[in-house]
Length: 104
Image (cartoon, rainbow, N blue to C red; front, top):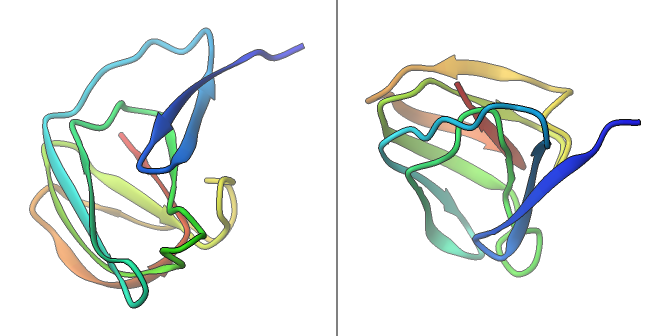
């Protein structure tokens, strides 16, 4: 049986295996949506799946990675498993439709 640790993040819940070591990136990851405007995650934890809140924000359409960690973007909300895009390096920004992200 796998246990998961959860954390409330930006109106959503981020999950990671409870046994995973947690390292924190420094900086801010910005993402932009049509419905929610500019959103951000400060000092994300490496390995945690961060979902883009579906209500009222909707899918993200672009990003700016201002952290010191690479980020992989995913097309499926809460999954961080299918539809991977990236990883995108620190300092990188661009257009991408995504519903969840993972750093590291």
